[in-house]
Length: 229
View 1 (cartoon, rainbow, N blue to C red):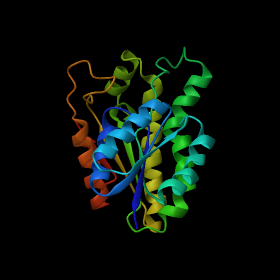
View 2: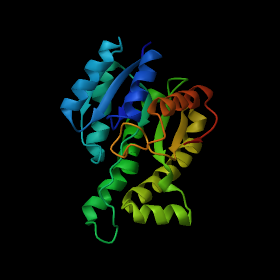
View 3: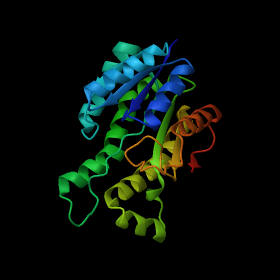
């Protein structure tokens, strides 16, 4: 039976590398993001590499819309084996100035929508011995005074809170889903990823390295959080 990976938050950098890596390993790829044109280009690039892919435009800040993707993906590509979540936003830079809706959007993408997708896909995943939830996270989520200082200075306070919540969610879901045979793992990226909006010419993390590590986590199915960078 063909295996399908849902790539949540598709764009340049890590998610592109993940789609290519898992596709090269035999997965069909469901690309999810808001920008339909970007998704169409991603599908075309993957198909050029002989990887079966399909685009599913959606706003991943909307938990109901995110969950509604699962039956659409199932119909187009079959049961979901792996959920990969790279989606994030960085618009609530100053938590004291950002409006409530912006803060809620930041947290929803990191936790509520991710959880909604997991719930919707669990009937598929529980029936597969190699099912997994794989999450990309950032070091701003760590509880550390220096990290907090950087988050404030960089205008990434909302992202730091969202990353912290996502990190806790990964740990909780790892424990909750372990008896069902669903592996949950997280790649915690501590540097700047090449080819992304964060790259100002001094990025030190190759997205293919992150994708490779995520594949290693998936295959080993042991370690929950791995640091990169």
